[in-house]
Image 1: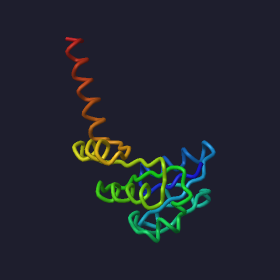
Image 2: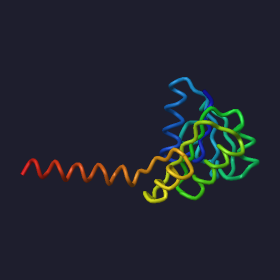
Image 3: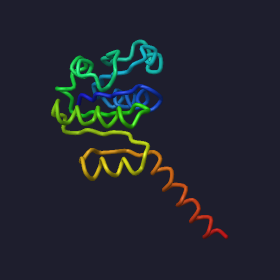
Length: 138
């Protein structure tokens, strides 16, 4: 499977390494050329230096042939626009976007039908569960 990842910070780079270990091909787009230091100089992935919402960068990385697309930058707006471009312009069937704002994540998931991962909501849920367990322990 060929997976395009936009954003190669801590999450994107760890995801890329994991996917390659599982036998997948990976393409990475990031604004910072130094992100390749996170995955290693000999990392077997395509890399395009650019912005994840730039059509030329998305074309250069081969988004049109991607089986999956992950938008994992630190910006909600960039992730959502990149995800929409991947799905609507390039026809990628499996598109996933990290969105920090829980309200926006829900909107994009329900109204735009884009898979969203919301670390903020996940943390809220985990903390609420932990508090509930405290009540049981008292």
